[in-house]
Image (cartoon, rainbow, N blue to C red):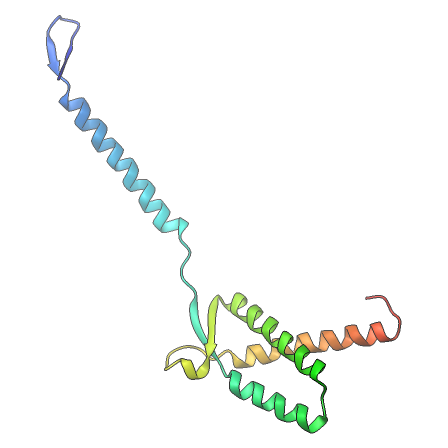
Length: 135
């Protein structure tokens, strides 16, 4: 493969081809490096929650206080919401504490605090609704 020059002779085209390939490779490497650096989020961490203990404590209190099945469902729904919020806020996947051998933070306190806030908000909402107030 060659090309014609202004002087009427021919000149090999391989230097241009090699330059184009090297330039394309450099651009591809730069795009790949930028994608790896800025385009990929780091994976979430792992944290534990003592779900068994939390559930057992609530169940014991609920039985002693004679709570209804609807209150148990409301607590379960609020617990699920609290787990989702804490996992999102801390950028972690929450596992039962017994499933984590060692090294992961325990976020039980944060889940309990979030759960208490959700339940309090629900109580306030139900109280206002029962009194005829608009939420």
